Image (cartoon, rainbow, N blue to C red; front, side):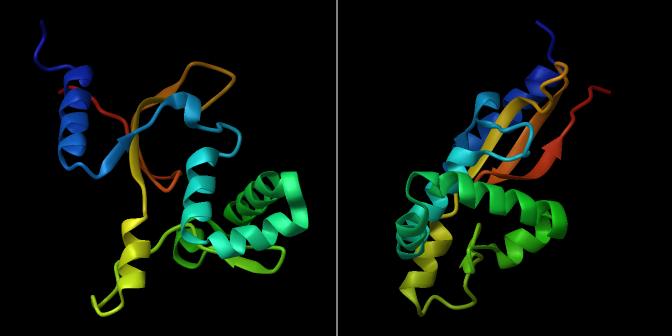
Length: 156
């Protein structure tokens, strides 16, 4: 067995992330290659942290709510970029939707701590990012279903 391979390095990274007990393991099948995000994780985060807003959108769009929200998110990512969307969120039918909550500066407000703790960090090994070929990234780290770090590992 070879000690120094990309697989072993991926194993080591995965082990550390799992040991932190903060990361969930993802799968390439969770990833929408056309839009470059994980729809199910994004929707679960929004529904959990912004349920009142979600219910308001659901009363307007009914069964199309998920599609409408993901379409609006995708359009905003295309025009404003990932960093802007992570910082400020995006709008869907005039309603501001957050895709991440950052650490509060104080611990005085338990609600802001709860929202911060609701962030979901995940990782996916061998993420296939194209439907046209079998190209993959070795490791991708996600914040609430949005890719924030990609790693292409190489042995020396």
